[in-house]
Image (cartoon, rainbow, N blue to C red):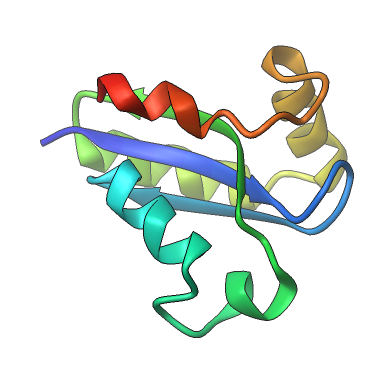
Length: 96
């Protein structure tokens, strides 16, 4: 089963959230519609700014845990390496 690690942001250099899922389009929809109360709905974190796809969800979980332990500066560098303008890249999900 595939897995995805993703980072959401409230705005450029704003609050960020790192998560993992086996169904990124559905999980993103849940974040954006505040379907589940929690961190992302409390802080308005709903813009997809980065994600990685893995063939195995266990690999995605390991990557998510590693990223969550990184300093904030590393996470910002990860985002800006592929998305320097912090654009919403959710449109990339249409091919998943």
